[in-house]
Length: 92
Image: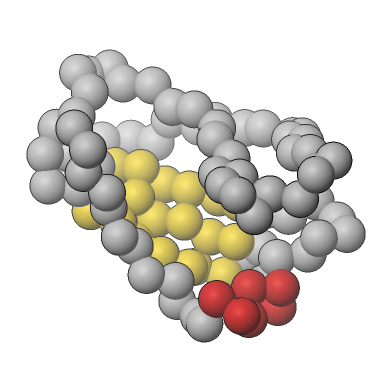
């Protein structure tokens, strides 16, 4: 639809490395409830954002995916690895 959601960081962008460890695996947890969804995200145990959508974008039951936003700043030779992925359905 061409819309871009703007979700502010809970800290200045230049402090990102205080929360993200480039040398180790990071733990990211997310809770998505409802449709339209309310999404809460934690990075290494710290709640970093809540996003509430305003409209239904996918039919129920929906799905999920993992995505990396590399952009032009993605360094050559960089890569992404995932491990210990877990999905848990919580009660309604």
